[in-house]
Length: 102
Ligand SMILES: [Zn+2]
Image 1 (cartoon, rainbow, N blue to C red):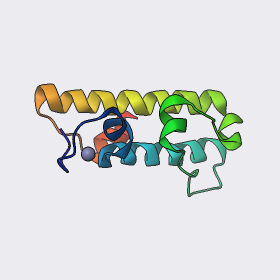
Image 2: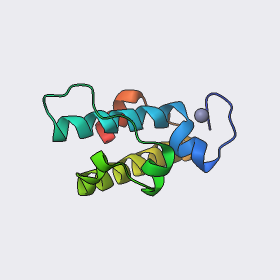
Image 3: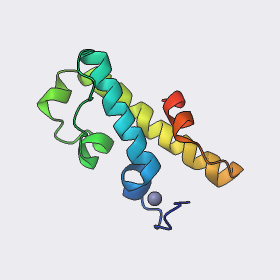
Image 4: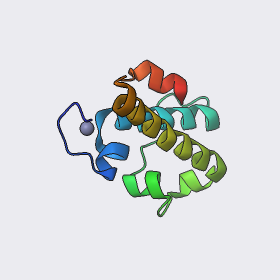
């Protein structure tokens, strides 16, 4: 399913693949906007263990733990349903659709 031809592993699908990285970047920007509206750059991107599994969440993210949990869940769900739309309906989501769905 990867446009770069990479085998579909869990880590690749949910983290490394371009559309997934776009979703995580978008989520970090939204987290910044929701918590610190004056900062326009968003928060530094968590690593894959922190984003996918909540492993050793950075202190900055722990302070907004419920919001981070919600955004992590939304990102993972969004990546999953976009993947399934491509697999089962041959529909590739644009970056705009990914952002709107998030
Ligand atoms: Zn890929």
